[in-house]
Length: 422
Image (cartoon, rainbow, N blue to C red):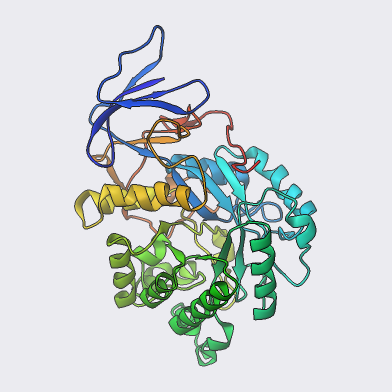
């Protein structure tokens, strides 16, 4: 296939040739079509590498009523995400070789490429787990979240040693439960969740995790940093970190609109802290945008703040939200590309994330003038709601995975996703 007149993130106009093996083999100002080669003219459109979302919860096995690999990966495709990495807190948790195989069987329904993370609990079986093609170990939970997989410091150190010995990256959910504010549990308003899981709990856990990682000479990646101090702490220690769109764009001021649907771990922060996180995304301090796509049904979220499950969906809306911000705001298109594709590919050693010869042809085409409000009824996730209702986004015209158009004109082709480490 030959894609002509594409505008790349840096503003260059280029033709891009994709070969039959699903890789890019030429990027030039002008490429003449060869024989009966399919030509797709995208004049005036933006061509980006597909987003690599290293943090999703597709809920299978165990909770397919919230999300399935089919619905989650279709949602990803419709949002321009071409690779996802699923976290271990499913039922059963991905803490052994057999549990990994059970999840891998579910993932055969994926419409996008995927990686599978292994988890750590008191009951994990590292010997069988590390025999499998893990994307990473983690997210390793330093405090309980969905799935109740929080571990103590001693086990975290064992996990660091085992991961290092097996040359497997480590990602960390960093909150310190001993620093949660128990006085907030007397409240019943939605903002009580943010009061309870304090900013200091995040920062202290990142400090401890980075100190231990340095002592064991094992770099870590810090998931969903929600505070400027947390980002700065990880960066100062030489570790990498990610920020979610909800921590970048939403704050505690959104609770009157969201109610218990806005409960997530770590929670929403003050408007001041949210703006500081936003600024660190824009200035390049943050390494990666990842969604922490964690769907629950409306019925499950319509509970008290102490009973509602934590998590919000986001895999379909992330890239579109970022492009809408970049179209008119302080975030550049090149920064969006780096945060969502180039940097995650480089950090996790994937031959993706670049529109350059030799890389996998995971590509997404956008019309930057096609700004539209996000509507839950138009999304593809099983949970049928979004915390970003009404916010501006730019959705893809089409999405290509491994050289094949997998989503176009609102339609999905047959599943093409494969395990990136198989």
